[in-house]
Image 1 (cartoon, rainbow, N blue to C red):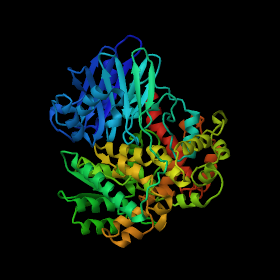
Image 2: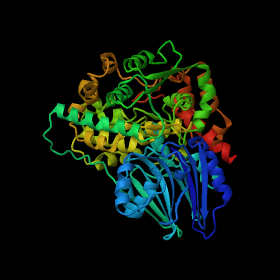
Image 3: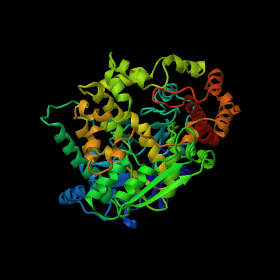
Image 4: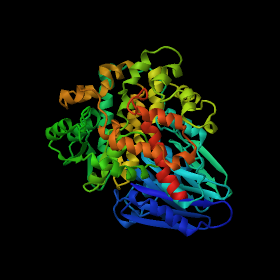
Length: 594
């Protein structure tokens, strides 16, 4: 619902006002309704507001509570804030606003650094404690809301986007070799705290960080997904009923906790269609739904309107669909790339960007289906992994990694050669989940780490670029904690997502439920030819790319010679991956540091 930023100095000086001005300016699109600043002594905070809850000035930020000696900047939504408000009021706290922002301040005053444990929702926030002269930062359990920072001996800066930090200057923009390995082997996923830039870091999901004016830092993890399977005497239908109840509560909360209308991004797939059905089942007013489509290519249709129209008609939603000409794809691509906090190779990023532009003219908040595949086992590679033999990493890597370590070395210049950073990172992540079954270990790693920097980040960046907040009910804390306990054989039945398909059976047409899983179609980028191929060639053969010395020319030539024939195990295009990485660096780093 906003964009946040700030600086804490360690060297006894005050933050320069222009630094905050520059950062706030780069966050305006995330919060087009209002802006604010706070500065006192070694700290300065900035905020851009997207007004969703308590639209009055009483909930403006930075929010200062003089009685408690606390100042807050916050991005997100706390879905249990009404309950927390009453609990805190019973403990003697007085409230001057009606929204969720002030509840965080009072929660911190009551529970200190344990306050994130009490918050259910999506959030990234920073609290300046005037008495202790400390800055406390926290990020939600699934990393739905971003929180980047840069750290030097002089101070700490933080922001909702990398662009805001880069605009402030002083960021080491050298390529991080560990992050580069992750980026090129995990389809652009770089697990926190790293990013591809050495001087740019991000707070990990479910973590908090306290920093004082001497520069001392303490990072803590406040939540773990309990993936150890408990013996629960539940039949298949009892599991399905439990999920149904939890999902209904999740979608209802994400509609009710808003003082503005909430729509649904309706792709026509099972996940978003089920959201519409559940919202209609719960009642509560008119439903707004939105779909986007592109021109067809000879190999593939560019839209799924026949399915989204079917669902919209079935539930009589106020439906709008937007058709995007292929001629717009390359023209608008630079804008979308400049809105990416990190390079994102999912080609549907542009689709979400263009859809967000249209939808933001109608509503400020939407629900979206991200996370359903990872929570309930919907991707084709899960059964492949389950059927394979060997250690966890031997079952996982060949079906998920974009490149082997040797191919990574063949792709980058020698100065970036080094050990295989990705394999041990993922092996450790799988073991750390504590789940008894291999598939549940994979799903737990997916939902807490891998999707954070893939679909979840992609949707936040692309919708918030237009001041549109996207809410993701499938990543509701209670729902995920329930789903991870379901035996994998139940989740993977029916070709995957058996639980959701069973819930949907009496609510949606069979053609929507049983059709092969679709992906947000953008065939103009998927099939690389003509202007798209020339664009990628220009990027990868540019002077900037050569002088960067990151990618081996031999590999670039190899991929350009047959652009559609080099795919990753999960069907990503390797040429597109390299072009997107280089183009992101040109648009977001070179343009600022030049």
